[in-house]
Image 1 (cartoon, rainbow, N blue to C red):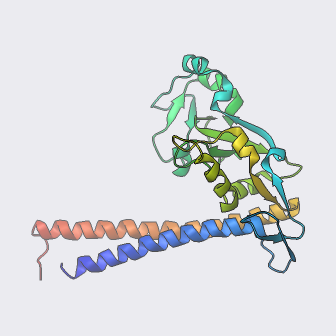
Image 2: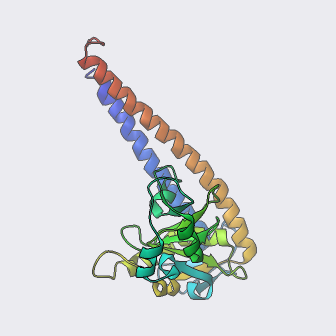
Image 3: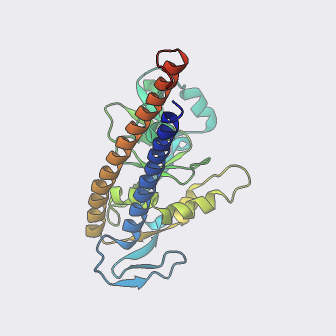
Amino acid sequence: MDNICPEIDGLIQEAALSIEKYKTWKDSLISESVTKGIDSTVSMKQSGVSGLGEIPNNYKVASVRWLVSLLTDYTANGSFGDLAKNVNYKDSPDYARLVRLTDLRVNFKNNGVYVDEHAYNYLSKSSLFGGEILLANVGAYAGLAVEMPKVPFLATLGPNMFLLKMDEHFLVQHFAYYALYGSYCRQQLTLLANKTTAQPKLNKDNLKSINMVLPPLVDQRKIAEYLDKKCFEIEQIIKEKETLLVELEAYKRSLIYETVTGKRKVV
């Protein structure tokens, strides 16, 4: 027992560190791809933007202000008073699910918050159908972009997130998600969010003021497809290691239980 537990602890630590390394690799892969592209043979130029460095010759840097076709949130549906009168949160499944950042971070594998049909219709300005970019605007995750998946239930945006759709003449929506998730955009948003005196918070003008690297549309589609493939592969490895971690922790607990209950003899 004295020898086995330290060995298991070492394996647990190794698996946990490996998971974090793969998560870091995924983030850096996204950040690099959306700013530098995925073709290492292209000629580069100085972006002229502090902290960005070189970008491919045919890429531009543009303000998000000119790239957004829709920017809204929960409060766009009405005043706080009217929202309170028309929207009641429910803990059990009802007509539609109120989508929060915590739901998206666990792929809806949690207990949700729901609204009835009247509330869903009242919140029509922020209904969700899949493919929207949602960006946290309050708290520790302010500036984090997530993508709304297509789901088999009615959904509407919850508080403390922006809903974005990008102008298709300039941006492929799926690429824009990756770009906003990447470190270049996220660092700009984090700096703006932390300028507030209380908890981190972003307003719509903050979001519009940041810059984004803008490849040609054909490159955007290629980058998004490439990242879909690579991120899926990395996420599968992470899931395997997370399963291993759970199994190792369960095995350690079972060893301890069997030892203290006398079911396993200590040699």
